[in-house]
Image 1 (cartoon, rainbow, N blue to C red):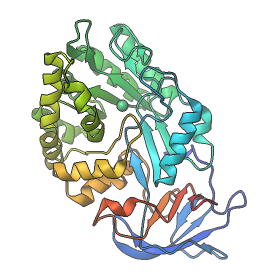
Image 2 (cartoon, rainbow, N blue to C red; image 1 turned 30 degrees about the vertical axis):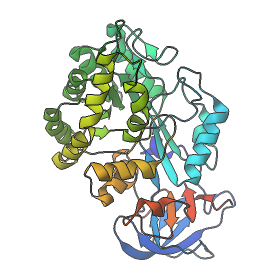
Image 3 (tube, protein in one colour; image 1 turned 90 degrees about the horizontal axis):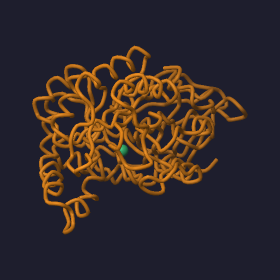
Length: 372
Ligand SMILES: [Zn+2]
């Protein structure tokens, strides 16, 4: 937990920040209660001299984008630090208090973990790929024997996550697995032994199944993932991050006129079964999480898609908030927890529209919105 929390300076009682007080309905519990923020942490006991935050109806620990790539200006382009700051600032103002970045063109600079006004960031460093099996210029290619060690090294250098690009287009333009099952299994074993977790990009049935059998912690995209993998995923706690809004946006380009028919069919058929995959995953007890991928997207849109796919709205909301937060290892609005919170006027359990224009956003007890 220390590593997860350690990326934010405490506010609200430290460094000249006053303690705060608010009274609202806490989500997901639904309890109407008073909360205080002191020394960057949540307190349920009154704190003298606390300043009241704008009155709101509902408070929760903020949105979580479990799969997003801030700082990217184009496919294959180097990390752009100005864009990174802009993206993270916009995310925080929209009420996103935590992001997992499953791969960047290069490792994220240290300032993303210390600069006020940004969400907490959990990065997977640079994705590990097979040679020639990812966007040119992106990813760190390794021969099979070097993949497990590279994954462990990347997770240790980042925030405890490694990202494996488990399948991609081959030299003939056919979408196939990039790593053998033993390589995947050894990579997961090495990262876990180092205390890290593994996110696997999969869009092919075989590598999806192999990644789950290897014990990865999350399946990213999961297009074509066999339904038979869902039981084992639920059993071992592997999450599914379907990144649906990005798939929807890419559909015209991936299935249009000049796309080779086998590629168009692969995409069309995978996308067509994606809602059923997500509905079955949720039904099987798999943790389904919201991620907007590339470019940085709208979590409310992803919540709406998850709901249309079959998740109850409250669960779709949890996928973009408290469920993701707990799965990533951070507490919600509990006594002593870091004060990451978002105050809303309306109940987001009734409509994701309520997530627009939060009244208050705070990360680690520091006010992000309204502007301090
Ligand atoms: Zn991605």
